[in-house]
Length: 237
Image 1 (cartoon, rainbow, N blue to C red):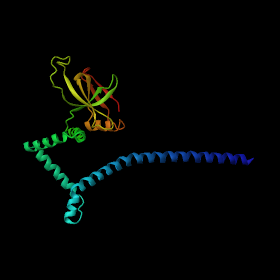
Image 2 (spheres, rainbow, N blue to C red; image 1 turned 90 degrees about the vertical axis):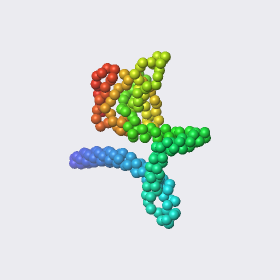
Image 3 (cartoon, one colour; image 1 turned 30 degrees about the vertical axis):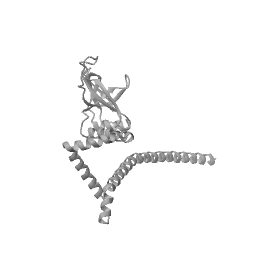
Image 4 (cartoon, rainbow, N blue to C red; image 1 turned 45 degrees about the vertical axis):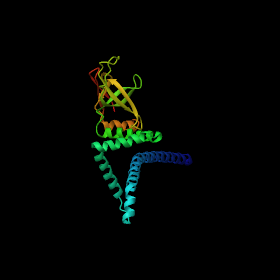
């Protein structure tokens, strides 16, 4: 008569052990995924920084190392930074702009080189303009179709004359709508001011949302104000 009771206790013990094992496995899985989410961006960032350091340090550092007979880590990076500063100083004056314009004109005559150079230059212009605050504010635009909204960046008021067209007299702005996950490409929209929705989102937070495909969002609710309706509503986080 004791055998069934012992079997029941054994089954309960095994069931409890199996449940605890599942909980431990789920916890380990959670820790593993959390560790991956923490380490992967960190490792990718460190790898990119290391690669950039190696490339920039090797541009001019190799020649210095051969000249003095031994390697000084970082000297190439310093020389590259000084070179960039010097080129920037030259580019700020009249003669420097003429020289750079001549070089760009020469490159523009070479088909393959022209496409490559212009593409890289446009990408750099977008990044540098963003860093300089050329994006005035973050807005929401109804794009690419009705009831579908996209993050956009107002770049300027559209002041090009439109006399004699159906757009004459409209108050318009230019809005850059970046693509995901590469925000250096996107679409330029020329749109009426009352067709955009202003937000209180920072440009940096908006860029993070675009690059991550929406996985990274602002840490707070985003207040938006429709210029057409003139009333406030909230997009919940």
